[in-house]
Image (cartoon, rainbow, N blue to C red):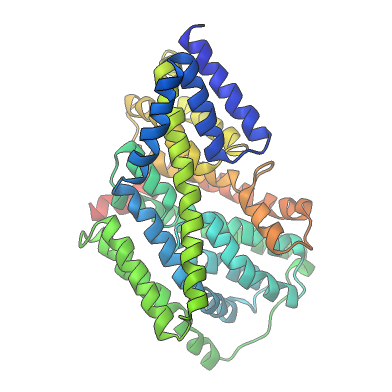
Length: 433
């Protein structure tokens, strides 16, 4: 059996394991080890299984991931997310669909100190859904806005998606953070406009909320002060070159912990919950990275990746058509595979193609992350949708998927905007670096 055939066998095995419901990290690890054993020998496969997990988790670069996750956990358990939503509610809730718009704003704000889409969706669902239910918002709009708002977590810095892309593609994480900032704000605006148009067509979906006085509005701004301070110190420090991404993540985690202590929220129970949440999420991400690395070694051995890249370049198609085909493949794979796994697995395949076409790798990274956001709210995987359904079991899955459909259109428009106007992503990095 030749190596290319073995490579195809490995991909088929991976897809079968994913369809059977196996964890993404374990599925890639299993398919990679099995393929390596067939292509070389079982002893070499066991050696790979012994060395890759240690080498991956011992990487200093990856230490930034648990630190940013810890910052988000401390912020949530310190009550910063609830205060943030309260401020957005007070300022925006009076508008038609205002609570859903406030949800998008709060998701964007929490994304600025979290870095994870699933964590953003889970956190804001516990805060936002009860409020929108109290004001009799349609379940499709309330659940759809939280699921879509959660996707901002992987685009607005500090983004774990950008961190993994930066490490895999050997690009500056600070530059990637800067490149994702404006597209993140643009996507927030598109999401808010989607809600406004939807509610204008059917006002019963999102009734007006209560009216607040100017004094109450000004008082509510205290709720965003802590998050704003963390964001300015951490992201501003990284942008300004005062510290690296790892150091910024550590500063952010310490700052969020101090806010939790100062607010009187630091009990043994909350500390245990925050740390265990950090360990669970970090372990899940690192398992995906380990599995993707092992499967990536297997694909490199079979030369399937290089053959695929050569086939794309030999098409002699216009660069934007090649880019569109690559993004379409990411979109299709995002429906069945974890977005972080796709970064580690596919970037080594497609980045050389993009660079050979003369395209900016930072811009491509932003486009790739935006495309992968769609996988978080599209069936059959739709991780954010499953998270919302797990928190609000009274809302059927089909209702949530129906609610996210208008946001998928908005996300597609945002991707097209960044694709046609690269300066949307590259303007801020060109100013800062």
